[in-house]
Length: 415
Image (tube, rainbow, N blue to C red; front, side, top):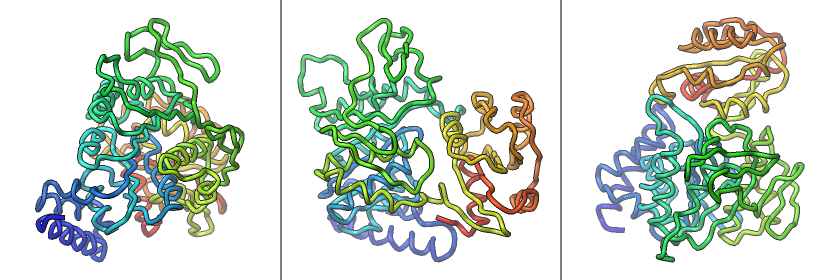
């Protein structure tokens, strides 16, 4: 690397270490921020010489990235932004901290995918899903798909692993017809992880006609856009690979959605030449992801943490949660998005019949939604009060981003 980049990388590592030592955080942002101030091209310098996978989407990025890093680890050391800092500052900090590694698997915020593609020149990009998120500042879903599509057209050599079940992702990964063959990506691998949330993909992004669905299949009623045949699929408690071989996946993470994340991780690793049979056992090493799914015993309660930050992810969280006392915590700080009207896009009916507690900065917004949904609840002011309010045994905690981090801090920043 140039001298400026070497200095910037060294300062980045030092700043991150000081942040961790001072208890100000895990250093996954501040180190990259300072490094990029010294050398604006630091991310590109740090990425050079590595085979890189980028993982992007509205939901599941952090978990899929952790699983993919475990799978690619069959080949050697892998740099990754394991704490979910998914903007260029986080990528820069992660690569600087890792030092020289042959591989990197990086989670990328969907709004920054084009920028990070440009800087890192990855070997493969995984596109998970697109749905509504942070209504006060996030781009409309079809607009986000258009940005992805344009970015991939500018990088025709990148290999793409994409979700066949999401019409927005399929359209984004399928470039517009062109007389210039160089504008068409040479390789798209489709995976099927299922898509339970359909409310952002009823209208075709190509022609504006209605999307119709029947079982696993979907198609546009006005143009040729339709579900492609996936090469990787979830079947029972395992994954079918492109050869038709079935691999049992023994995860320590809950929910069918994580089987889909595992299928994606195996598909990403395969783009590096990793055989599924060699990678699948590595997936069981992932027990929690930056606190997500972590289980902590406190005062006789076994507390499990689930992160849910938008309607699609709340739907999956309800599927993962046991039929047990449950705490919901909602904030609306800057990282969460300030608009809580998305709560009315969530059907809370699956929580009926259990002891349900609510807390957080915007607990009253949640209370109104639950009342409309005819779901009984009890308001508690603190996490400690919630623990005291439930009997010994399991306590499920579902929280959006900053509320999740608040509770994780009370549990000593469990990872």
